[in-house]
Image (cartoon, rainbow, N blue to C red; front, side, top):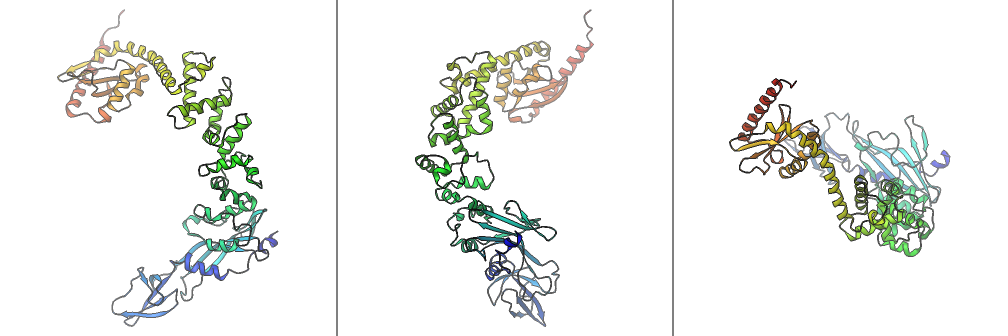
Length: 509
């Protein structure tokens, strides 16, 4: 197998590869080495390989400056030849495509590690190439790969991988792929019209693309018809839900649908994803003849997370009934997606269960205006929940009201209800409302601060634990002003004195 595999490759890098490496991959690897010959500064260009004088007197070119070679016009980096060049080695990875030398219908590619070494004699430096991975792409059969492992042995890899073994730190080294070499390699082969140009920007080396295009010729038709998203999903190894028959020979076979529906999906091609096709097949299996537009719109319901929510409610209605209802709600309201409508419907049903409303009637299960009924039901649930907390808060007021305090322009008193806490948080733009349950259970004490002249207008909110001040904040959590801070300190002393006096009082016998 190894012998047959390597027979596809030339024994030496081609002149075209050498030129590409010199003029593209190593375009920045051009140097002017300078030195002095008496008072004259001399230069040697590694590109044109010419030696010439620069001038007399002070340095014309300085070490590490960029300069233009006066012989060939190349942009070069200036290096003093006498300075250390121990690590002056430029490296790059180059992916190069060619035709097989034994079968003109087969395309091959090699991942080269390439370098130019200026650490020794910098005259006549040539690009050196070491193949790290090789690929053979046979139409219909697919791609195969051999890689150079750490021991120096070539080993087959089960699947085509876009990176070779031994490319440790590869992301720190430039990776180049000659698309001109691809154009030459695929000319006259079944891959010529595969649409590879569409994917150049996203998949620079195109190695996994050609493997896919060889295995599944339908990639060509999908690309030409604008269904590139489906090809990308396969390349990215995303879930395709079995919605595409990749070995189909016609678009009807690939999509498993009539030509008319294929053409309808083409109008949506820019946004179509495998889930859109899966949605089409799923609803039709459930005896709902959705159109391609409807299937695409409903696709998110077919994701496992949302589908489980639908299945959890199939004791109330079938999947199709639920989907049709949600679809209708989205069209009739301002829901931006069908999954958002599903979430609100699910919340509405939970609210009904919490309030003890029986879900035995279709009219209750499927209210005509979901958004309106959901909001009303949510308010009823909140009122029910608040009633329990308010009862506990009212019980606490007998303990906390004695700590109410006023002096000068300010007053402080305990918060009197859940609604007041939420109103306080809304007015001052902070989160005191989220403390309601802890306040009701006695885990913390919440007080509101007002101006005596405006006792109903929120000013500051104070949290205490016992006689310890935990926090005091004004609007948008601002710190207290100086006069407010002084008043709060007086209030804390008032609370401390009150609690100490309460502890000294004898218990009733």
